[in-house]
Image 1 (cartoon, rainbow, N blue to C red):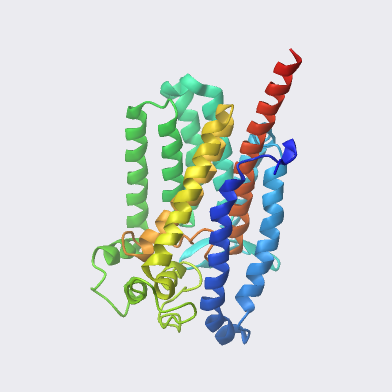
Image 2: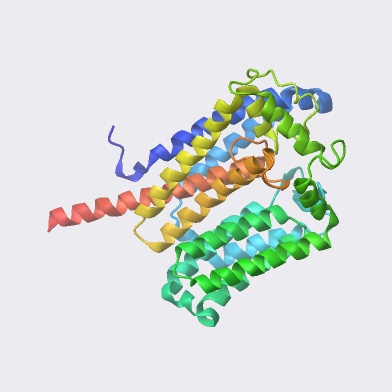
Amino acid sequence: MNLPIGLRANWVLLVPILFLLVIGFVMLLSTSSVVGYANFQDSYFFIKKHILFLCIGFFAFLLGFFLPNRVYKDRVILLYCVACVLLVLTLVPGFGVKLGGAQRWLSLGPFRFQPVECIKFAIVVVLATALENKKDKVKQFFKGFSPILVLLGIPMAILAMQPDLGNIGLILLVSFSLFFLSAVPPRFLIGLASIGLSFVAINLFIHPYQMSRITSFLNPWSDPLGKNYHIIQSLTAVGSGGLTGLGIGESKLKYFYLPLQYSDFIFSIICEEGGLFLGVGVVFLFGMFLYQGFKVAKESLHLYGYYLAMGLLLFIVFQAIINISVVIGLMPVTGIPLTFISFGGTSLVTSLFYIGVILNVSRETHLKEHEFIVQRKRE
């Protein structure tokens, strides 16, 4: 089917996303009903909210797809400043909401969201703009690379005050990857990695509860009914599923044995109910998305589009990798949800917006190629 030129893009990218959304909906229906009924006397409480978030996310996707991506570049300073202000507001009494040991939520009347998702997008736009404009200048530390580090360091400092170590690590990982893909010299990358590790180490010593997560990760069986309860129950759920799982809706651990079974630890229930096959299937879908997203970035006709698509792509994929790694005991608990599957409005809406922006890069590539072909025919 020949689509109008304005709608042509790498739509194959949406295939794994749609499958992940369906899996997420089914698993939320299975895992959240118990908590919904116990806390709100409504088995469908979380599903209703999830459907609302999906509707908002659909419009966010359309916004990302149709709004020209150069708009973000032209207003990069405004975008960055607004995102930083929203991040600061989480620390202001009356606006910020503290949950799970971190004050990362912003309350605006009946609505509550995480501004860190805004700063993630702003950082990608800042890096994409800077890496395109500076090009080979990033090989010079003071003239090219250090100003980028300053812009990156400001939101990192704010996140450290919340504290939100998981998202600090995620942002540093994506930023490091974009620097690696650019002309930034290896010695700068080694220095950045050293600074990042030092930053994380200082945070661990300042906040004892974060250090306890590391010690729990290193020795998960030391306190099975206390601080290690989450990960032990998660591993129990993963192991209980075997190859084919207990069947959708048949989880035993979701009955208040496994905390946050509908959000951060939903992959545990996926493995318990769907077994190794469904767990590997989810990983395969993220791998398929990574491959198609990389194609979109690689085909972009300018560096800005390449870095923009790659940055958003890596945020989604790395977030999934971190969540799954936590669930199966390869990383300490971070509080980062599983993209497109875990319950969470801010993450779902912004992730769908990211997909729209990535496809917008693909759409722009098709438009430019069409214009080039038309021009050649006229000549």
